[in-house]
Amino acid sequence: MPHKTFLWFILPSLAAMVLFIALPIFSVFVQSLYVEHDQVLITTENCGPFGCKQETTVDVEATQILKDQAPLGKFNGFQTYSNRSHLAFAELTQAWSTATNARDFFGQILNLPFYKALAFTLTYTFVVTPFVIVIGLGIALGVNALPAKIKGPTIFVSLLPMIVTPLIGSLILFWMIDAQGILGATLQRLFNDNALSLKASPSLTWVMLFVYGVWHSAPFSFIVFYAGLQSVPSETLEAAMIDGASRWQRVRYVVIPYLTPLVTFITLMQLMDNFRVFEPIVGFSASANATSLSWIIFNDLRGQDSQLFGSAAATSMLTILGVAILLTPVLIRTWREFNSKTV
Amino acid sequence: MTPRSQRKSPLLALLSFGFVALWVLIASVPFLWTLWGSFKVQGDFFSKADWTNALYGVRTLVETGGTFTGNGYEGAWIEQEFWRATLNTAIVVFFTVTISLTLGTLGGYALARSGYRYAFWLLMIALVFRAMPHITLVSGYLLPFFQWNIWGHLSTTIIVLVAINQPFTLWMLHSFFLNIPKDMDESAMVDGCTRFQAFRHVIIPVMWPGVITTGLFSFLLAYNDFAVTAMLLSQDNQTMVPKIASFLGTTQVEGNVMYAVAAVVSATAPLFVLVMVFQRQIVSGLTAGAVKG
Image (cartoon, rainbow over all chains, first blue to last red; front, side, top):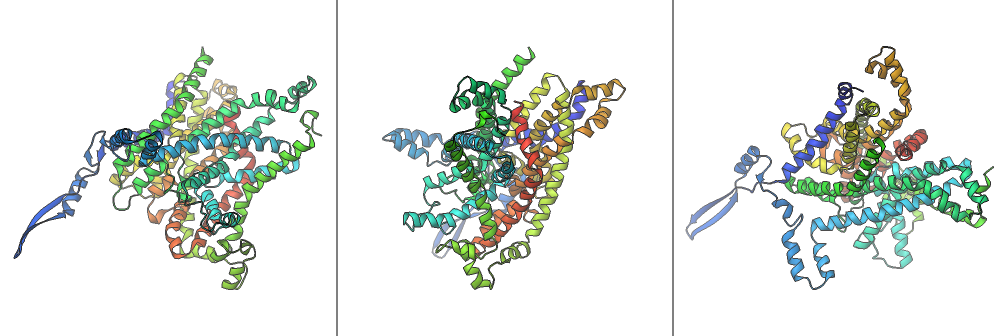
């Protein structure tokens, strides 16, 4: 296709992506270098019969004028990145020098908002992804062995957790595990502990969010594996059987090699999707015990009286950096494959 | 008859059947439970004393005089004006899907037919864009949108959702167009068509299965979105998902959790219908990217 025709075909789509994805990333970067204006303070001296005292008040008008003149705020360089809510270099150094052992050191670090969110996001990503793959494969093998008549309805039901709006899905589970919901109340009775609440303990909250993540994403890997199983030729399986391969050996040496490329695909998709975990934290009201990178950006932007654009932008840049690191191996691989194909 | 290679020992068969049965329960019971419970009062749905209350509606009978009640739905739809949010969702979803498919088919077709290296790079960049957490983009939109006074409108959100949708739409349609033989449009061009005429008369008539599948996923993205719609829409223009999130803040205080439950069930119903009608297309769409590598 000539360059010119190509350009005309791709132009609308490209324009949309440049305007609303590439430029915002740039705008986020610029925003992250600025910080909100300080409030303009006026100090007045009130002299009364009992002497003079100084009073400080906020000059609302002047603050507003300042905001209107420079909506971005004042230039702050990279200081937002290094402050306590982000990379917190000062706090890190302090923790390093005061901490008595590794446990104490990590305890101190995990109290810093950015590292707390990063820890949860990474744990979520790397716990949920393998579980999704293994459970999805299990379901696919199981469904594949079902009689044809009930396959359809089974697939229908299996799709539901994935198709449902993440926020709604997490609410549905949240209401069930609520202390007064069916699962929460049953657990309390089982353990005979009326104070048992999945919401109160940090580790149980994490587990709850992991369970939601697996519940939500397992159908995706199930469907992909299921389709992959259909493409395993039965002749090869027959041949392996004639050669005396046991059932396990057939799965190990015939079926699994067919599914390996699918594992790569699912891992890639899951890493991307799990890294931006956000809705379940809102749905489960879990922000006291578990925050993710996306959630702290959301929290900065939603601020009641003032939205912290600079802070949100800095976290966004760090998140984008994380995505880039996560994707690098994939991109390098695809690039190599592409080159080997064309040469 | 199943081939001999797929026959299993009875124990293994039982185990694998049990596993699937367990999964089906885990996948479906939360939905059934919430659907059933949405017709009860809060005292039953959140019954600490005895969970079977929710099944039989003991408190519901006491409070309303029947074992089923539509109070939650009435409160959500009429009192809290959930119908307005539903209407907004319909508008946003309809335009997002239509516009993204229009842009996506043109772009995807071009990417599939261009043999040049830059087409590959565009796809790679699209992949990186697809991985961007949506909320990071939103933090870039807010300030400019406030400045230009376009914050809060449905149309702004539609354009943003279209753009966020593009990387995925491009990838998916690109792989569908790769499956349509090149000879078809090229022979039309040999016969004197321009590239666009070939696209219009030869490709468009055969591309619908791919477009429908891609459309389903665009629909899901727009319908399920929370990050963009929650941050970019004003109170009056809220769509269903942010509306439900805002229910949580207000209704939990007033003891009207059942409004939120009813709203959740209402918002899930269209998705059920969608899966029922388009199950085959969804399955083929999920696997389209995977099987081709």
